[in-house]
Structure formats: C-alpha cells, structure tokens
Image 1: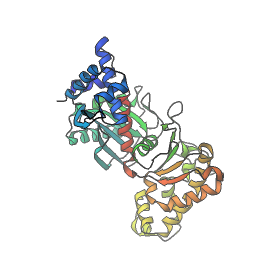
Image 2: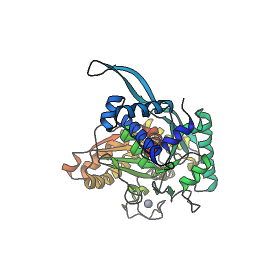
Image 3: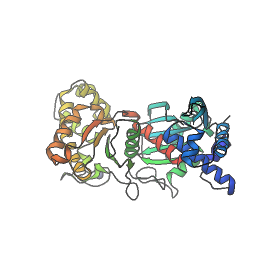
Image 4: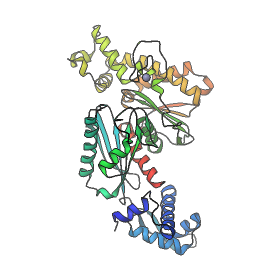
Length: 410
Ligand SMILES: [Zn+2]
C-alpha cells in the first residue's frame, strides 16, 4: 500500500534525518531514476548498474514496493536460464499536473508515474488578465481539476504551470503576469494548493513536451515556434532546453524586425510579433474587412472585436480566400524570421506549434519557401520544418514532464 508519508519521504527536498535514513533515501531515488531512464530491470541489473550489493538492493526494492512506488512485474528468463523477478515503476504510485495557461482558456492534464497522460481537460474557459482576480480564478480552476480527478491530493507530487512572457523557472518568479507581491508566484500558488509548484515559460514547456513525446525522434537540436496570440520559441540544444541566464531565452517574437509604428505587447515598436502572430492576424483580417474585402468572416462576425483566432483558422479550413491569403503573407514573414534563427542555430528540426499552427500547410509551406529564400542554403538544407504532433496537448505534456523531472532530480 502506498502511503502519503512514504511518498513524501522519498521525494521531499528536505534533508532532515541524517545518516542511514538520508543515505537510504538517496539510494531509493537512484533506483527510481535508473528504472525511469532504462525501463524495467531485475535486482541483478540494478545491483550491477548502481554498484550496490544485492542484499541492500533487495531490501530497498522491497521497501519501495511497500511504498507503492515500484511494482513486481513477475519473472523473466535471465541469462543463466534462471528466472528472475523484474521490477518497474508503479504507474499509479504518484501523479503530476500540467497547467497550460492560454489567452482565453487553460488546458489541464494529469500524468501518472509512467508518463501516461491519464486525463486532459482542454479549453477550460479562462480569461487571462494581469489581475489578482484572474490569478484567483486560475487557482480555483486548478483546485476544481484536482477534486474532479479523484486522485488523493497527497499522491500529486507536483504541478507545472506554463505562463507566457518572462518566467524564471528556477526562482519561480513570473514578471509578465501576476507579479503583485515580493514572494515568487510559484510559492504563492504552492501555498494555496498545498502541492509543490513549478513555473515555466509556455513556449519552453511546449518545446519540452514535443521533444519528449511529440514530433521529435532522434533530433538533438530543435526549435519549437509557439505561434499563438503572441509568438515565442523554445530552444533545445543537445537534448536540453536552453534557458539563458534567467530563463528568458527564445523571445523570438520580440526581435526588432520592422520599421512600423505598431506598439507591441512588450512596449516596444517593430517587434516580429507585431506582424507575425495570432493577434497580428486578427488585426490584419479586421483591416481587410473594414476595407470591404469579401470573406466568410464578414458574414459570421457581426462585432469585429469578438473575432477570435479560432474563427480565422476555421475560415482557412473552409478555404476562405482572405484568410488563406493573409496566412500566406504571414507565413512568408515567419519564414524570413526563421531564416535568422536557422543561420544562428543550424537546427535539425523546426516545429511549428501553438494555435496558429493549426492552419497547417497554409502557413508552413510559405514559411518553408521563405526560409529557403532568406537563409544560407547549406544551413537550411539541414533543417526540417514540421508541424507540432501534440498540438493542444504540447503544453500540458511539457508542464507535467518538467514538474516530474524536477521532483525526480531533487
Ligand atoms: Zn515586443
């Protein structure tokens, strides 16, 4: 039987109780990490790989089984013809939650110990505003998800929350949203929920999810472009997220790209995001509709202020000429921006993700064509451009996996 106290003991970040207790805790974590990285193993495998004596491993594995963290998966034929028991992580030993905060909704998911997404609630309505009220509403929707999940709260070891803008994933500060108090936002939410909480930039979390469970197979150097209302980028170099000094790397949307007079959300003028993003697309559609362009959107949208990104994506799917033409122009601009990144990073793979990427090849093909036109040909011939495989789930998957990996490495 799994008990809350034994789970918390193994995964606590406190170093209380020195000596043997602390050493056993460290060894238990080593066993869990070994099984996590290399899959199910026998006592003999674990003993050899971790250089711990067989009696010691046997005793620790038994304790971990009692804690509910490991499972005895039955006997297999080992090399000497003797049958040995094989052990693996217990899938329902503990769980992790990922919360992907978008402009108008949140996606929330529950991941089990063996990295399966057990439940995902997509597009739970939630208006993101930089107010205390909006923060309280976010916490409330997470609490609701936890109570509806039917998983005992003590089995949920950590929560990963993705927010757009400047987020320091180490200190837990968010600077673009909910920076109202001296205390880091991660601690404020953690105190409210009673579950260890980590914050992550949304594009980084999506890149992480896609890298481990999405469109990436063997590639080590990958750029994930998050095309939503804003435009961000998660950078993976040599299999690791690249954060920069404070976690602020990958602000692709805010590179100075135009001599326009459009004020960006960051307060500056001429950012790439002012012409290449979901909010730019909405502005361009409204401008064209105001000029009298014909589109199925003009009939559908009586109030232009209510025009959502999803409406334009749907219009493109229905082969609306205005939507398709604007996406083609935006794709060309995106490709020009990507040419900069490709010349800098020489990546093997660029993944187009986020809500706007749901327009598929309407955006991807002109982007690919412009990328070839504007970047060095030897460099761009190394690079594939693919659409996100996880789609809406990329952020939830990343949020869960980052929280899980942080707990396992404590
Ligand atoms: Zn900007």
